[in-house]
Amino acid sequence: MSAPDVSIIVVSFNTRDLLRDCLRTVQRYAGGLSVETIVVDNVSRDGSADMVAAEFPDAVLIRSMVNLGFAAANNRAFEVARGRYLVLLNSDAFLRPGALERSVAYMDADPRIGLGGARLVGRDDSWQPSARMFPSPVLELVTISGLAAKYPQSRVFGRLDRTWADQSAAAEVDWVPGAYSIIRREALDSAGSFDEKFYLYYEEVDLCRRIQAAGYSIWYWPDVVVEHWGGESSKTVTRLSVSSSGRQLTLWRMRSELIFYRKHHGASAWLVKEQEIWWHRLRAWRNGRRSGGDSAAKRDDALQNIALMRQAWLDTRGGRISPQRPW
Image 1 (cartoon, rainbow, N blue to C red):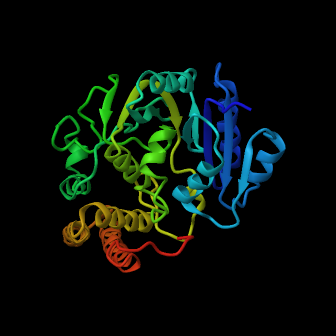
Image 2: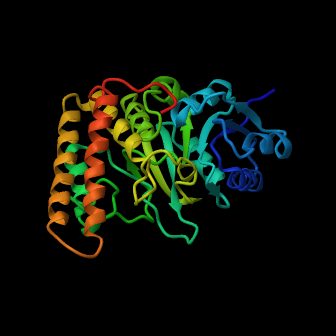
Image 3: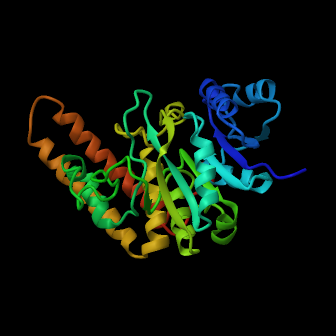
C-alpha cells in the first residue's frame, strides 16, 4: 500500500462537536490528495473518542489512558503516521477550501521548507497572529507591558507577532502556531519529535527552532486559510487559573515558558521570571492606590500572577524539569 500524501493529526480533549466539524472539513476539502486521519484522544469526558469510532471509521483512533498533553499526544501519532507530510490540526480548527492542497504544493515546490503554517482567522474572519518570531526576555517584557498591543505597527514593539507586517504576503518566519502546520517528514526525522517536557504551550516554538537548526526553513502562507476558534479545550479545565486574553492556562504557560528559556537561553529563565514578577508587582501597587472601577480586581489578578509564577519556578526547578504528566 502506497503512503498517503498527508497524515492529518488531531489531538482531542473534550471538544466532541467541534471535533466532528473539524473532521468533516478534512473529508470535504481533501481535494485530490490521499489523506490519512489520526485522532489522539486525551481521555475526553464528553464521548469524543466514541464519536470518532462511530462516525469516522476510517480514522486511526488512539485512545490514551492518560491526558498526555499536546506534545506527547502528537508524538504518539507520529509513530504510526504514514503520510509524506504530517499536518497538525487543532480540534477547534477548520480547513477552508484549498488549504490542504496549497500546503502540499508549497512543500513539494521547495524541499528546503521544513514546516509551514496558515493564515489563521476567527469565526468572523478576523485575523489571528499566524507568523511569529522567536521570543526573548525583551520581547516578553514588551508584550506583558502592553507596548506590543499599543504600538502594533512598530517593527520593535510588534516584532513578536509580526503585527507590523503585510499579512497578505508570504514570509519566512521563526515559527507558526500549532493550530495548523504542515511538517516535512525528513525535517522531523532530522530535528526530532516534540520535546515532551512541554505539556502545553511553547512546544511548537521549540520544534520550529530545532527544525531551523537542522537546516530547514519555516514559512507562512496567507492563501492557506484555516478558521481557528481557539481555547475550546481550555474551557473544560476548571481547576486552574485561565488568563483573560486567549484563555491560556496561566500556570501551564508559565511552566512551559521557564522550560523553554532554560533549554535555549540558560540563566535567562531567571530573568524572565523576575521581570514578570516585578511587572505584576507594579500593577498591584498601581491598582492598589486607586479606588473604584475594576482596580481591586486588577490588583488581585496581578497578585495571583505573582504567586503562579513563583509556583511555576518551584514546579520546574527553574525550568530544569517538567512536572509529572498530567499537569
